[in-house]
Image (cartoon, rainbow, N blue to C red; front, side, top):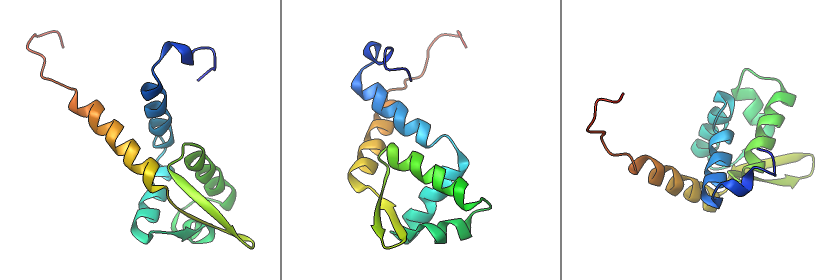
Length: 110
């Protein structure tokens, strides 16, 4: 999203859109599932689990990290990734609030 257009949206809308964008690719969802199952993971292990190249997995990890959903610690030549618990809970709350705000439409408009 262009920096000039963000002024027209609330901070919550911008953050929620950032999380949604990070979740917008099946490879990223798969990576998150792996991290959730293992509690922590080394990048090479993630590559072994997915039908993607190392560079593609690294790009998806970068997107998830930039969105704040994961964090990574460098250990020598390896980077160990895990869920960022605070951001994960925040994303969960914002998504729940969005979906909970739906009420049934009583008209036949759609």
